[in-house]
Amino acid sequence: MALLLHVVIFGSMIMAYEYARPTPFTPLAVQATLVTEVPETRELPPVVEPEPEPEPEPIVEEPEPEPDNSEELRRLAEEEKRRQDALIEQERLEKLRNQEEEAERKRKEREEAERKKREEEETERKRKEAERKRQEDIRRQREENERQRRELEAADRQAEIDAESERLAAVDSGELAVYTALIRQKIERNWSAPASAGAELKCSVRVRQIPGGEVVGVTILSCNGDDAVRRSVEAAIYRSSPLPEPSNPNLFDRNILLNLSIRQ
Figure (cartoon, rainbow, N blue to C red):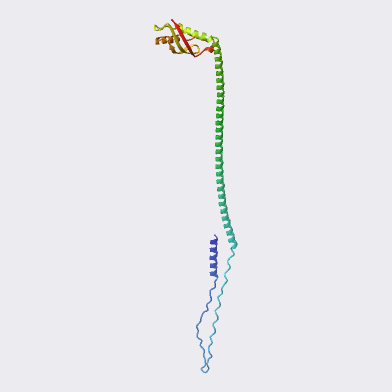
């Protein structure tokens, strides 16, 4: 706009100057012949031609001064500067807004990452705490089980000791001899001697029984009879089941060693 304004002003000045310039004055030259009657007897004086008048100097008009448009130019320049400053400020604000939005986005991402990290740490802490409690419970349960086992073992050992003491006391009192004699008598009553049996039978036998006297196994350790005699002794023991029970429960033994001596 400023350039266009300068072009318009300059063109106006040129046109004004062309119209105001004066046209130079050119005098007209007239040719004439002067006729003078001169008497023959007198000499005529010489004709003196008048000196030509000097040409007037052309009038040069001073060009009109250019109009003072400095105020308009200053105003336009200020407006242009304000426009440029406004654009620069707008760009600055836009850049600042973008920077703030980017900073806000990064802040939110950072806060979200920190929140997730805290949640993961809290979850891991709870898991470790739960695992610690579980291990602690297992340890306490094992300790309790071990304590109970020791107590039971101690009680069983004490019961065995007490039972052995009572059994020994019963043995010393002759109750064991009475108990084994009752078992031998019942076996001898149930024995049927085979034809190959001698006059006197002597066999050493281990009998396995369960509480109540039921026979669950017989092993012939030694015997002075043949296989038929051995089979007859084994059959007699199974026929005697259940075996007599002792008067003192402490005398009961799952494995009884019997020495059988039978005469025909």
